[in-house]
Length: 277
Image 1 (cartoon, rainbow, N blue to C red):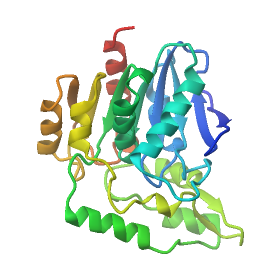
Image 2 (image 1 turned 60 degrees about the vertical axis):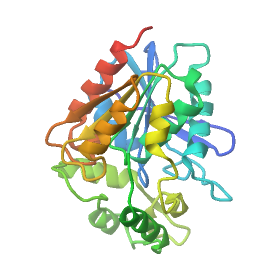
Image 3 (image 1 turned 135 degrees about the horizontal axis):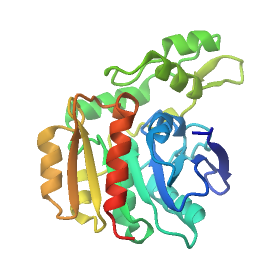
Image 4 (image 1 turned 120 degrees about the vertical axis):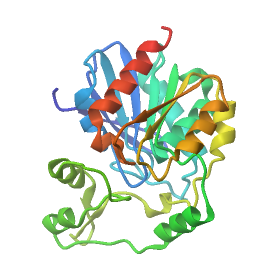
């Protein structure tokens, strides 16, 4: 696979995105999780058949997209960005399948509910279907942490860690992701390139209620060893809506798009192929 093309979508906020297979006829839109960016999808993009045009978006406040000022990072805000982005990249062409991991999955669910005519189907990968006081406290603590900077790129890459830090992800993949997730500050130091205000202090979405209201085909994908999307909550979500399916990726953890990219690619392809054209 060739390197992706990099593009900007002007507007408020200005959005950056990557594109693979620009001449393919069927489109898949990919949304990353919190503190991540479009490049996190590259392992999956390498594994998806070239018949699909792939578009990975840096969501507002992440990667090379513009930060929202004043801060506006609710799932509804992201969903509106996705709708604007989909309208821009598809025009009169076939509607896309929209896929999101973690926070990106929550945003996909909000998008599917709020903009049902804009997509053929939706996939939410390892999302928090239900939350807890402990989880909300953790998210508030993340938002309150000071921004950490490093003196040079080598140190920043060496200190890079996933949250949660688990799964058998190859070291070379982590180094690639780290390099694409760091930027220089005005002072010449290095830091992660996302807006810490994007941590809401909660998920900002009633996930079960949202899933119940979605009227387009939806796939929920759970990593078998996930501590974020429990088996019980995932099954409860699947049972709440006849248009919803559930698949579990074996021996995987929360960062399944990095840990098991081939398996994620197969799930996406099979779901996309199952939808009526």
